[in-house]
Length: 178
Image (tube, rainbow, N blue to C red; front, side, top):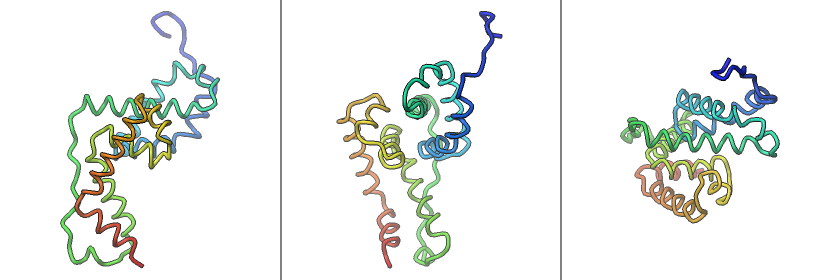
């Protein structure tokens, strides 16, 4: 029972949406925060925030767009409010780094993730929305609540920071080698 005496009932279709979309939403949130536990918290917070509006969202064609937007805005709010977490740096290069092994793809993903996690929150959100979620500039601007020009600028700055990162060029050169 709520304070007003009305009971809270589960909105129609929300449970099915969570069951079918939770894995994709979790991967999306993980791309933003880089931590599974924090990504789970982020998705759960977004679902809770979506609950009261679910009935009106089901009238739209894409309720997942709204939930992703809640995830992004919640992530950005958390970045403004929370302390900055330490992010592990890529280890020092060694002779063994040139050896091709079964873990090379995992190492590449981890190195790239480490660099992306050091981007400012808005730049990271733009990179995740544009390249992970494969949204257009207009869709990204809509999701972030900003102009397309801001998305272009944030994306440009983020990609420039990624290109300037020492070590990433050797990772991608090694990956491109036959």
